[in-house]
Length: 252
Image (cartoon, rainbow, N blue to C red; front, side):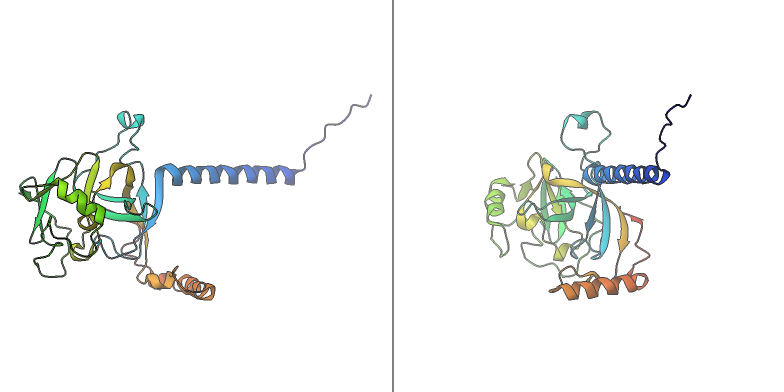
């Protein structure tokens, strides 16, 4: 008696299905990690020198501070503290990402006198700060001030006037005052105001790559041919433009 034979799948087809499943799984994991755990970020300016340099590429830990939900009470998230470096949505234009250092937390009373930061009556110790200009009688170096310098956000000026008491700025609940380490060349909370808790993305974890000349990777090139040239130059000179002493360095 002849029995119908079971058709065996073609081995190449099975391999293809397995490869597609593996690829799909990798993509799902990558999307999950990028969405909930880490995010890549490039330092676009000199405002955090010498802690972070233009051309540093960061991985940002998005789980450090939690998301403000019920899980915050059971997960080992940490509170945002003075001295923390954070990446956040710029309050004036949330499409932009900024990186600064937390100087004032909710309830703090702060002021700057001749570039020195005072919080709750005590001088803040800031070994990370870089100064490039002598102290001057300016809004930048003596803060808060009731005069209105150019570049100050109008909404911030109105809010500022309501939160100054005895020459000190009071940080409201749910908000943080941030500044760049390159104190004389930083567009920060002095100019546009507080960072709301919900705007904070996370804390820089690792410099995974650092390049000496970001013009070689210029995304701002004016034409497609310029972009292709810069990309090709970066690829062919990757060992020369990489700052090896900063690559794979933890951010403190």
